[in-house]
Image 1 (cartoon, rainbow, N blue to C red):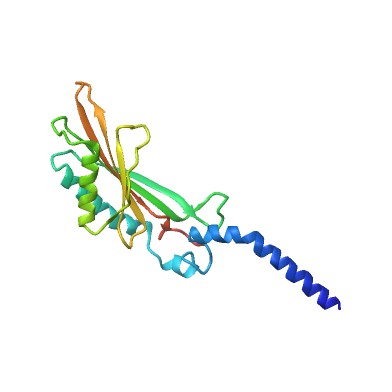
Image 2: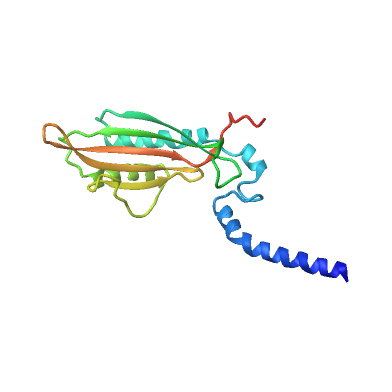
Length: 196
C-alpha cells in the first residue's frame, strides 16, 4: 500500500513537472539548445565554427558590394565577437560559442543617382546569383527613415548579411548614398575555447 501511494505521488509530480517544463522545452528546442537536438554535445564539439561561417559569408558579400559600386572606396570594418555559449539561458554567457560580425561600407558619390532601394536590390540580386536566398520584404534602418534594409542568407551556413543603403548629405549640400553590408554569423563553436 505504501509503495502504491509513493508511486502515485511520483506520477503526480512527474505530470506536474511535464506541464511546467513544456514551455521551457519548446523555447530551448526553437533555440537549438535542447539536449539531443542540434545542441547535442557531440555535434557542438564537431560542428561548424564562427570563423568558418564568416569565411563562407564575407567574400560573397564583399563581391556583391564591389559589383554594385565598383568605383567606390570600400571600407572593411572588423566588428568583433559576442559570447553566446554555455548552458544557462538566463545568466551571462561564456565563450564556448561566439557570434561574429563585420561590415563592408562604401560611401557613394553624388554623381551616382541610384536610390537606396536600387542599390540594395543590386546587392541582393548579386547575392541571389551566387545561390543566396533573400528574405521577403524590406525594412527601414534605425535612424535613417529614407534608408532601406534587406536580409540575405547563404544556404548551409549559419548567419546572414544585412544589406543597407541610406542617403547622406555632404558638407557641399549634395546627397550621396552610403551602402553597407553587415555580415553576422550564427552563434557557433569557438575552436579556441578552453574546455578545462
